[in-house]
Length: 585
Image (cartoon, rainbow, N blue to C red; front, side, top):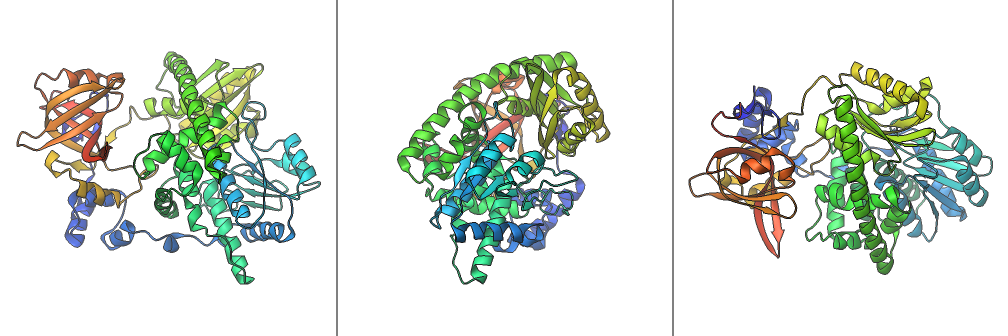
């Protein structure tokens, strides 16, 4: 049954409210804890019981941090790293070119530096070398180093690691789905190895690296030594966790929560410079990591020099940080322009092929490999289906895919690679990469669609808009927002609370920026609330609201604090609307 009778909103979605079980749990939460009803609704939806509420609202990392040794090869990996420090060995870090890889590399660079050791950073070029270790690069690194640490990559890199192992030792710290056999490394620490139990499968690579450094600290204390302050490095773990869309539950939630507090101290020159150039005037929230800072760190790996992001995160020099941040900001602007062109072409092609299949996909000549993953995410969001976007060049295509909840894309792509329909491919449940021969493209996508259909992909329509309850404008106070934020951070696996404002009167509205809409909404009883709808005119919502002619609307969105020129006020980030009075049914 639809919420407020909204079967088809102005963005084409059905509104869905909390189910009976969540409503009962929310009421019980209120009775036992005395918390505000919107907070109780949020906690109930997240599966928190009244007995767990206090600890959930104040999570302690020490209570949630798993034993690093619960992961296979962890003790061996940490011992080998400490051996390299003790012997003054030459160490190289081979990292992926995304935020998770860059943050993981920066964690290691920072940790070694605090012990007076320098390491070599190597990040492959996305276009020339592709994802993960390759034989020439690993062989060259092995010729000049004693230990190579592969972070956010390496689990499937049998030949490159075998080539390096002839003259050096390799330790893999990764989280991508493992194969039936492991590469010949000294240690492979990965919660997604096939012989792991999956309890820590939600960790990103930086989370794995952090646990390895925790184990290093344990072994150092056992030897009577003091290690670096690991808590000060959690800003990097938080950034990677959010940017890599790792689910914010369990230890991930605590890592991000603590990491945001570290970031607010503005102690890391790279993140300070990036925040300043992005005009981030407030202490960062999880949203800023995913949508403001993360894309800029990623920009170097997507369309520029692959190591820019990692260098920015690792530098201690404020002048170098400022220069790198400026360059990454420029590249991010260029990335958006390239993405826009590819996105339009991909959407047109996908619409021609049909948007109701289990897999939505598009492939185009010369599409930049650095933006295909972002475009795949946009197609997935628009269709509520797994999406793959591929850039063709010569006899091959390199692509990236994004999945929807409940559909394991990484495993399906890995199966295709094992069957020979892909030249290579891998990833995790929600995101994966692939390389395909041009003449096998159609066959590979047909097979992938069939595999995804078996998991239930393509059975639903447009994504429902899920709401946590009703809220009146007068109830939206700064105190309520602070109470709701205590249930965060919010992101993947833990969506931010979203409320419906029923039968709202639009008291004013105006277009701001490029296609955005600013509104004032009231309840007819004197209470008023500001609202902002970004990209309003990309949907029928913008026109309907701006030309309301006194009509009332049900509005839906998320509460936030708006800070502008030193003034703090409550506003709704508006996501959807529907005419009140049954006109939407």
